Image (cartoon, rainbow, N blue to C red; front, side, top):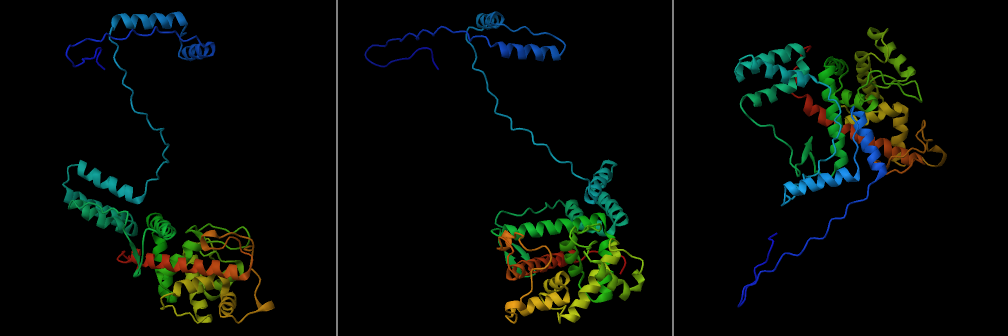
Amino acid sequence: MPTDVQLKGPEERRVPEAPKAPEIAEPADPEKEADVERIGELHGERMDVTEETAAAAAKAKTETSPEPETPVVPPPTPPATPSAEKEETFMDKISDYFDAAKARGSNAFSAGLETLMFALTTGAAGGWGWVKETWDKLWGKKKEEPSENQEYTVDDETFAPEDPDRQKLLAAAEKQLQEVITKNPTWIDFAREAGKEHGVPVETILAIARFESGFKAEAKATASSAEGLGQFIKKTWASFIAANLDFSEAKPGDPRAALHAIAWYAKRNALDCSIDLASENATGEVYLAHHEGAAGYKRMKAFQRGELTGDQVPAIPGDHKGQAFPKFGIEKVNTYADYVTVVTTMSSRVETVADHYAIQLEGMPQPNS
């Protein structure tokens, strides 16, 4: 601000600057001084800050700087957010290899070929997802980022961003499958092997494993004997072993045996329940039979057709009574009808994920085929 004001008129006058109000020293705060002294002692020196020393410092600054500068206040720094350590994935290793090849003097094309060979020899399934990304990188093509209004298409079924639950479901399912491809690529081979032997789509096998165990081979249920990728109880596992003697010594925690068991059980239930494995909703129906067993599946279908009334209506199985499923429209499972709603909604989600997996698995190399 200027120190004087120029007034226009018949006669120019200078308005003198208003006198400054005398500065009043802030009373000393004993607790604050004690805190400062303690901080100084922590650093190996004692800092004696008193009212007199503070006033003297202010006076010296005024004498040396008659026109005090307006202090520049820096913008507030946002609090640091601790970032979780990111586990190095197979893709990270591939990217590092590409950068290292370029650093050794290889041009982009040569570095890409070297890295491609490294990817295929280190883990064919894990590297396949990186091939296209590397090729695009060689020719300078930028990775496409989804826009806010982008729609996602799964098996000719389009849904908009207004459906956050479905987007979240597919994002989580895709991430889990990519982790399998990266860390346990042989599981994809096992699923293909099992699908070929039992005539079940590989995406159906993987989708069931994803929903039953989250792709955790060591998963164990707390309320039953169910365990492994397919969460088979002891009785069902024994039936699988009896029908598949090649796995006579296998346990439910064995990934190859578990994926074969999922395919075998899907085929058996499809035959018992008249499910056409080539139909559009086959995965959802097969999952329903996997979850309920063939007898439970048939009871549920009869209930949906209105054929069961009164005492014929089954009880809510297991420990599902009283459980809450708000995102399925059920605040609490109080009736068998509530339970049917929850399980059938889940089966449709399995179907959606299986369709998505089918797209992801297209074009992946099949080294063991």
